[in-house]
Structures are given as C-alpha cells and as structure tokens.
Figure 1 (cartoon, rainbow, N blue to C red):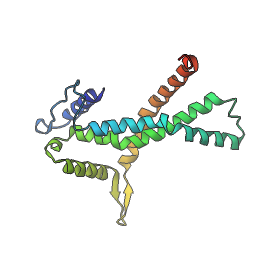
Figure 2 (cartoon, rainbow, N blue to C red):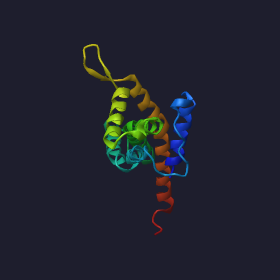
Figure 3 (cartoon, rainbow, N blue to C red):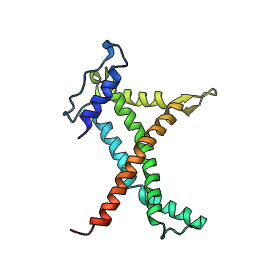
Length: 180
C-alpha cells in the first residue's frame, strides 16, 4: 500500500542532493509497483517476522535468563512479554536493514532501469558489498562502519514501532479476543 509514497519520498530526498542530470523521475504515489518493490516487500516481511517468528524463541530466552537471576516470570509476564517483543523487534529490524537500504538504492539509481534482470541483481549485490564490507590491512574482509550505523539506525527507528504494534495486538486479544 505504501510502496509508491515511500519510493517517491526516497526519490525526492535523493534528487535534492544531486545535480539535475543525475536526478531520477518521481514515482507516482498511487502506483504500487516498481523496481524497488521486491526489496520493499522483503524488508517488510523480514521486519514483521520479529513479532511473528522470533517472539517465542526470545520469550524462552528472556524467561530462562529471568529464572537464572531469580526473577519470577509468571508474576512479571507483561514485562517479560514486552522485553521479548522488543528483543525480537530489534533482531528483525537488524535483519531487514539490507533490504531497506537496497530498496533506497534501487529507487534512486538512475541507470538501474536500463539494465537486464541479471545485471540488476549483480548491481544490487555489488551495492551491498560496497556499502557493508571493507578490506582490512591484512587483505581480509570486515564489516564496515557504515553497516553498523545502518543497523543501529534501522533498529532505533523500527524496533519501537514493531514493539508498539505487538503491544496493541496483545491488548486487543486480551480485551476482545474470544468474541468470534
């Protein structure tokens, strides 16, 4: 639903930072598809996995840690649920970061539409490699500081949103759940 408007926003932000010759045409906000659509959907699926897939394992980890330090998880269930949801949301936000950056790259790269599908895939992979990996003095490969910055920014922005969504969902289930 939000692909068109998010694409247009990224393109507008990009266009004000480059000379006119490098600017990209703006996506129509009501057009729900485009070059960045697969990355957009992948990002959202990955982010939502935090509250759908990762919450239970995180809950088990939080409960285990609480038991080790002597905190009663049953009497603190709302707190441990929130902590588990937040940890799961952080993990999902971090995992969704490359898809988010790939989306932004694809919708703001002027030449991307003129490439073949295989060339687009190669260019996307090269973008991620260039952004997130650096050569070490010994000739090895390491994670770049840019990657750490992007993971931090994605987590700081998305984890609170996802945690809020699941908290609202838990409240709705609690108050309205079994009325089917």
